[in-house]
Length: 333
Image 1 (cartoon, rainbow, N blue to C red):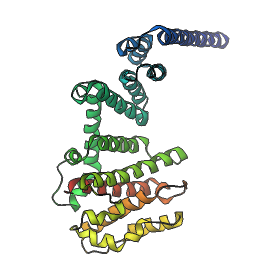
Image 2: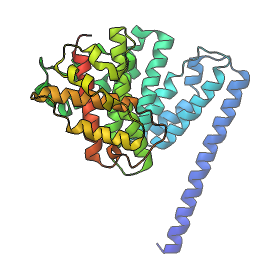
Image 3: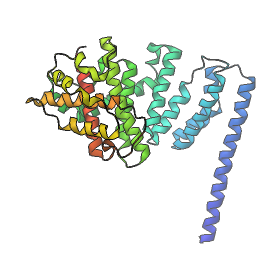
Image 4: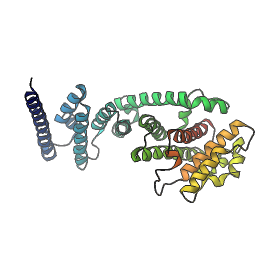
């Protein structure tokens, strides 16, 4: 086949592809108008429309980007129809769009949509019924996967420094309420799947992830202690801990005036060894780091922050905050 013939064949294939996509778009628009104008809104009627026929076909045949677009279109329609029926269930497009995104390795949005589908199931069917449905089963699989990842990457060092030791992260997570658990899973998975790259998008997400963990510690402490304490007052929540007295002495390291002051405090925390007990120093640094990051409200983002300058620096800070969270979950409050 000559190069001219080959180019002509490619052009015809592209034209057929765009023609097929245009036909799909037209059929979706027609069906959307018909539903909005004529149908009495019911969830099962929406879920069985042409959108789902296309979406399932794309999912089964590996065209995940097209499946994502179809279910996004269906979700947009259901948002319009929610004005007619606020109780309309939107679980199907959320779940299937999440699957399509995960298949494209877009874990951050995909997992979020799976969790949103589970929340929709709870809202519509109640928690007991929702736990029999697909979104919950996938969420549980994610929970087990992330728990094992934390077991392998963070728990061994935690157990070396803490007594009694924790059997597993899943045991510690029993001290979380469900919303906390979902945030924890999303944050750990996002950090693992994103990896470290020297671009502004990655740096914003990584900074957001480590701040979410710090805020999660504070929320868990407040909820379980029933006290409106800040993370920079963690010594008041764990007064008998060996590191608590040192925490009070170095509390000024948890606040900052500007970016250089923040960086200086991070360096100062890293070098702290006020006790002869390695475990005391370990948890002191963990909680000081978590409190400093919690107070770092990021009025502006400096992409040259030390914790965002290298994977080593980021992982070191992130590990400290994870260990502070594991400690919080392991203690009675």
